[in-house]
Amino acid sequence: MLVAIPAQPAAALNSDASVKDHRPELDVVRFLAFLLVFFHHVYPRIYVQEHLGEFIAVLGHSGLRVFMSCANACGMGLCLFFTLSAYLITDLLLKERSKFQAISIRKFYIRRMLRIWPLYGVGVTIGLALAAMGHHASDVTRFEWYLLFVGNIYCAAHGWSGNPMTLLWSISVEEQFYLVWPWAMRWLSIRNLAICAGCFIAAANAALFILGERAAATDFTIWANSFVQLEMFAVGILLALAKKSIAGLSAWLGYLMIFAGPVLWFGACFLFRIKPPAEGSESVTSFALMLGFGLGALGCASVLHGFCVVGPSCMPRWASSLGKISYGLYVWHLFMLVVARGFISSRAGSVPLALGFTILTAKLSYALIERPFLRLKRRFEILHS
Image (cartoon, rainbow, N blue to C red; front, side, top):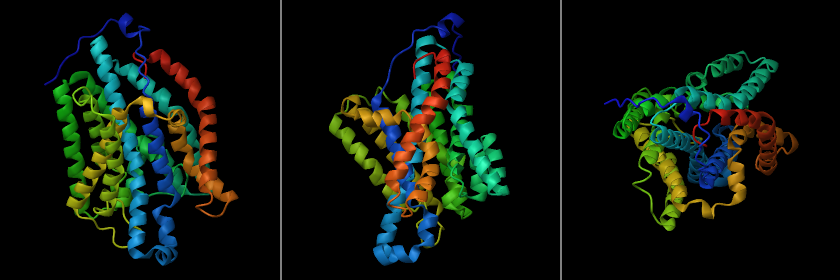
């Protein structure tokens, strides 16, 4: 059923009456998601494979599997970004629709372009420059795909690269989601939006079943697949739609949900191997993939809703502040891990330096690259985001 929402007069849509609804707890979720991804990249699977004997000598086979499951569970920070993005976009557009009985698709896309494209363009340019200087023709092609926001499709087909800007593939997944969801928000009723989210989950599981039957590589072919990651967006959508009905829970339950998230992620990696260990076969059954990604999505929902239940009063100000620059933290962190290892050869020893470099660079890029476009973005805001 389509619900045609009557157009609101332009004067109303251009009104300065914005809703100031800053939520520091969501900034902390952003920072947590970045930290998880950062630590996931400290000991990437390829590095462990290259030093497999050393790791087994120290940890043993069982210990290595636990260690790699923890490292891979940190990779779920990216899924948490997807869940949070869907939650925020759905919540914001619901408020816009409720207040003005309309959603301005044009202004939505302008806001997204001004928020994402400037820093993304810088990152892709650096990636292209590094690829050209290193004479890596395949990486030049990779970043050409990134320019069209289909970089994840290239990565799913060809795997990862040593280029520190390879991680920008995830922006392609975000942009593909934005192509669809605002239109659904404009035309569908709340009930049908929930059904649409359920269809996303069904599509993700269908993709996992097909990819599992084809013994696709879990590390990139499955992980970078847009349909697979739809499950993460879906749980964010459902949380936003159900926000009023699940409000009023006690803070202790919120903390329990925050703790449950990493447990579910670890279970997804340890029990169902949704991201491969450092040794052994990558072959994972279709049903294991479906169960594992389902646990991962539940973990994302649990963490996000847990922070919402706990609320802003218990959030450390420094974490909220760093969460505001989480986009820059994400874009720069792999590059800074490489830079830090130029100063300190030890991978573990270079981590604090890399984190410091990442925070400093993200603050600078926020001030010099992002902030001017964010000021311009405010002209197209209908509600304050």
